[in-house]
Amino acid sequence: MPRVDGAQLRIVEEVGSWPGVEVRPHRFGGVEFAIGRRELGHVHGDTLADIPFTRAERDELLAAGMATRHHVLPDSGWVSRKIRGEDDVDAVIGLLRRQYERVVAKRDRASAV
Image (cartoon, rainbow, N blue to C red; front, top):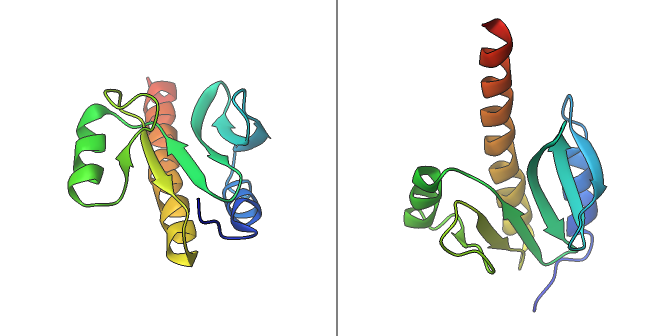
């Protein structure tokens, strides 16, 4: 599979700088991003990212060509994005940002109640 050397490091540096994000090893290899116990997604080296969304969001991302069905769990809300070029690195960061904003907004609504 093609790879972008340093992609994982760039993603880790950016996503890890967001308030509240923890960077830790992922149980199936690679690096996981989380807020508390909630996983935002993970990257497998310089080649692939996996990010959970609702099924409705997944369908929107698939229709827009922004992601593909998860490589192991194709019927879930999870999506995958292969990293083949610099634009894919930016796209992965964008997808993780979308998930981050959704999780933070949900957490903030829950704490306001």
